[in-house]
Each structure stands twice: as structure tokens, then as C-alpha cells.
Length: 348
Image (cartoon, rainbow, N blue to C red; front, side, top):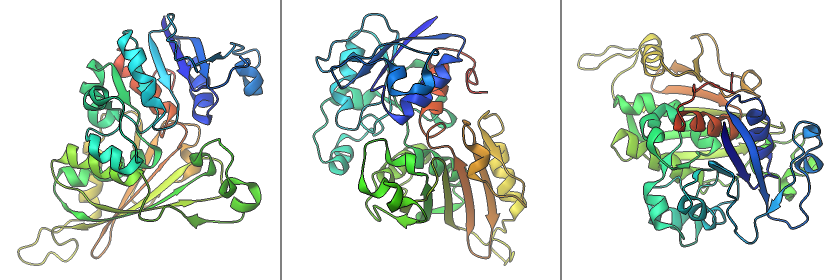
């Protein structure tokens, strides 16, 4: 039985993680850590867990590493997480980190966007990006995973087949992304108060969202070319879910079949995605007359994708649950790969 701990157990993503792990046949939760000193039971923080998990939460302020775990899920904020991760790695405990602290292989890029010096140079260089659809083999042998962001998961899965085949311009990409309010986290903030976000849709962090460089960085590494995107996220009045609509420009003709051009059809692009994701248990392709809906993926680890060819663009739409495939579900998928379990265990 794999013994796991959750460091930062009061986050929304931690609640989702606990729910999954409680039904996982190979896992036992043996430690919960929080940044407070009163040692509440986790079921006092999340009453839905009463009689399911009544484990007391331990303070992590002294940065003491528990002895009774094989794997630590760390759900602390960026710039905080990197203060704890090395402590676990040094003790031989594997780590799946939910923050952005270990998603970048370029330390300078991280420091530019998060405006702080990275405290774990070795860790950021050796961590594996936790997107199993792209980095499964690396995940199997690593001790440290940087669990991807929610927007980045939906966007990368939408884009990587076309970029890998070199069919679209890597510097002419527009991503229109929409997220439920839980994507902004559990900490109180004005724009997530009910009266502010209800009956309202708004763009935020236009031109400056931190998932933008993460998307560009990972796609550039995976497709071996410099990728540049225009990324605009929006907050929508629902609890959970992400919908990304991605617009890309093909390098060749699409429907005209002009001399000297390679004509691409809806069937061509759909076939490309079908082949690329044919062995992926959590990527589902919609048929040509269907589009992804957030309600079809909420409370699941699936990413639904649809493609559409227009006169001068290819449009790709993806939908995920930001708390599951965008966070906790993906972390468990990574854990399953890391420890040799069935990848779908606890998730289907």
C-alpha cells in the first residue's frame, strides 16, 4: 500500500485529491499538512469528509518532514512550494507539486514571470512536466513532477498534434480560454465574491497571465520550435470547468486545393487527432458535428477535443474540469504512472 501525504491540505484541489485517493485501492492517506497551528481534523475543514477521513492536520510551519509517507502531494502556492519540495526529495520521498515552481526547465523564465529567485536550482532542472500524454516515459523514472496548470493542460492538448506535424504557424496562435471561479483558488478575493462574479463574464490578466509562458515553454520543448501565443483567459460564473477555443493558421491551403498547396479537410485534421490520441485513456475526440461542453467533463479526468477547418484557420476546442484533469485528477494519473499502477486506477 502506497502511503501518501498532502501538504497544503485545505485547498480546493486538495479536497478533490482526497476524494480520489480515498477510492484508490493502492493508496492510503497517512499525513495531512497545513500552514496553521491549531491541528484541525480535515473533516472539520471539509465537512463532506466526515466519517470518510477524520485525520488531524499537522502544522508544516517548522518544515519537518513526516517519516510515514512514500509520496508527497504539495498543493502550496508558487514561490512557497519550492521551500518544502527539497526537504522531501532529500529524504527519498517522491513529490508531485501542484504549483508552478517546477513546471519550467528554464530557471530564468520562471524568475521573470514569478518575480522571485528560485530556491531550488537542482529541482527545477530535473523535474518532469506532469502531462502523461506527452511525457509518460519521463514520469516513470522521476522523483519530482511539476503538475501542469489547468489552462495549460487544455491548451497544450489542443495544440500539440498540429504543431508536432508542422502543419500550422507556431507564432500565429490565439487562445480564448474560459474558467469557472474555482480556478481562482480558495483564498477570498474581490473578483470571486458572489455579487462580483455572478451574472458576469470578464477577461483578466490580458497579455500577462502566467500560464502563457508555461504553454509556450512546454510546446516549444515538445515540438522543437519556438511557439508564441496570444492567450486571454476569462472568468465565467460557474464553479468548475475550462473551455479553450484555439485559432491557428495553417501553413498550407485548406479547402481550395490550389496548385502547389496541400489541401486540408475536416477529416484530415480529425484523423490526425484521432491517431495522435488513439492510446490515451483520458482524451476523447468529438465527432465533426459536436463540440466539447464543460458539463460533459466536470467531475472527470477527461479532456474532450473537437476540431473544425474554416476558410483560413483551423479551430480546436478543448474542455476539462480545472480541478481534476487540470489539477488533482492529473496528479493521480501521474502518481499511477510513477508507481506502475494502472493509469486509470481511481479515476474511472
